[in-house]
Length: 133
Image (cartoon, rainbow, N blue to C red; front, side):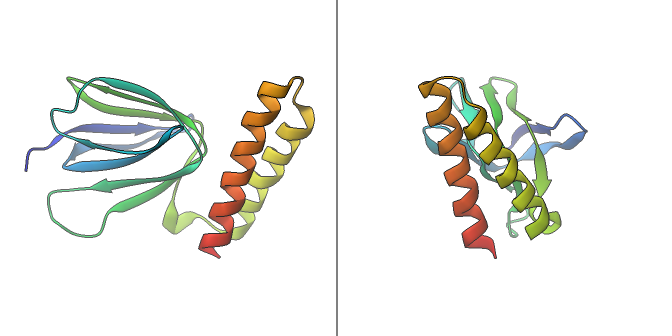
C-alpha cells in the first residue's frame, strides 16, 4: 500500500512527522479515513482519537485531540490540533480537566450557536471519558 506524509502539530510541539499508510481522523461531521492519493479536503475536528497506521502492520498509534483542523492536500495530511495527547499519556485527571474546561465553555457561551457547539464538545468528552475509564 502507498504511504503519504503526515504531520500532527499541537501548540506545544510537533508530535508526528512521518510517512504513514492510513490515518483515521475525528472530523466534526464524523470520522473519516485518509489514505495516499486522497482528494483534497479541509475539516474541523471534534474531540476524539486520531489513529495512525504505519506500514509495519502493527497496532495503530492513538492520540486524543481536543479539536482543531485537518488539511488533506496533494502533499499529504496535516492536523493542527488545539491539544493532542498520546493515549498512553491520557489519564483521568487530564480528561476531567478538559471536561471542566468544556463545561465553562458551555456556561460562557454568548449565543445559541456557540452554546450548541460547546455542548456537543462537552458531550463528546464525557463519552470519551466513559469509554476509557
